[in-house]
Image (cartoon, rainbow, N blue to C red; front, top):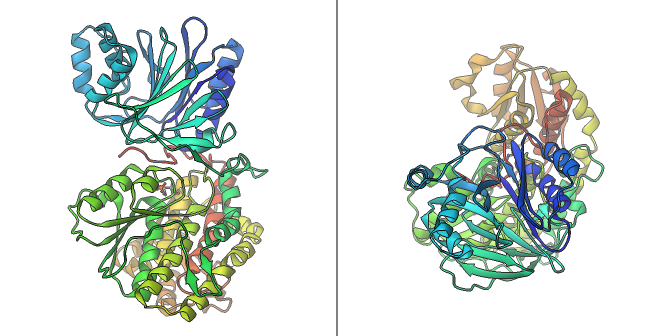
Length: 606
Ligand code: M6R
């Protein structure tokens, strides 16, 4: 999705902004632009394509200025092009925007009638025109911004620069925006990695907040002009965490970080000796009398929810309903007061997941978020939040966020089990021993990356893949297929193995490899039966199992053996080779692994 950065300080802003913009590239975009205010007028440059194109132009132009805004655009209204790229300008007002202005057509008609001329097809362009319109009617700059914001319907994070007043304003509603506080300088950004090398002190703006930067001062108000106070928070992510560190792609680095990320996620929480799980500093909702749990998310995080459901229902016998956030919010779900609603999100900024959580809360549910980003909207708005300590995830394909989400769900399941008396200390101790061994086992899978790369070479030219799994392994199959399709553009779909004969079996022949996730668990025999059906139709099987003596191993075209653990945690170990398989195929095909076409890291619009 679109990315915003801004600077107000004493240094030359151009390089700072371009560098911050390149740190936002991972969010996905199709064009980029910059506005710099030097001594005189605002200078704007925009380019279709990569930030690098913009960098070439501005470095040649030796642009000067210590106040500025820059933007990466992910097209919603209007094709990717230079004239639709941000910043947009009206008079001496310049705007960058992330989000969607839902009533832009009505506003555009109104402004056109008042004589405004539009240069782009975007919804965004109404914002600078509205501000300029109020300014022409005699309002001062900040009042003009406030009034314009009140006219808007939809979602926005905006940066506004006014030439004549040398003032920068940042404001948000339902799209993320943060302020970084440096030494005599301020930054604005869509997220932390953009400016993590500049400061570790951040203000997470809330909906309807406006930050006004003028002459090295910052003032925080709401859209009604009333002063607001927001906490300055220190974030312990380091610059190195948001860089590739010698790996060819962020995705590969993040796959290899999983052992560390899971260890960090367990740290201080898995009290093996005591047989307890602690979430220090987390005020979890009262769990007494809990009758139903909801687990709602999008994409990869939704697959983690499906795994969480298996864990909780099997062990705690509490009914769990999972849903895609985009479906939940429009189906008038039957949520009862007192239900526990768990939203799961790496970014904490996924628009549908936020909306689903708000909906559940309005129906009386207690809300808990599993989230990776401090200060994100889900983390702030949920009654409680348990963080995954994965560190920044930059690759668009989610990897370490997924496995740490499963680790948190497992801890949560143990925690709830202890609270409700379903588990004794001994039960928890035994299970904690298993999860403590997971980082080491993950590492042993990572060590086999060469052989997985060799398998990728064998399969890179196939155009269709089917992924199968049963029970807790079905979401693993779904996630394996999602990883492959999103970064390699190969068609891959996943089915619950038992469902194959109800349709997809018609597709099977020698040109359709079938990835079967089949550990030696309660689903083993049944999945073997499905593999027989595939082989009877000349299908090639790629088998992922913890069982070296798997009865289908000798007849599978490819076998990948992973270490064994308990049922609830096996998806972590089965998933790692599938991540590597997808990565190596995409890398061999030469796709843009970290920023696959059409995709955005954080889906902040509906
Ligand atoms: O930040 P979130 O976990 O809420 O994001 C949800 C999905 O957009 C995300 O998992 C997406 O499916 C990834 N590209 C998958 O790799």
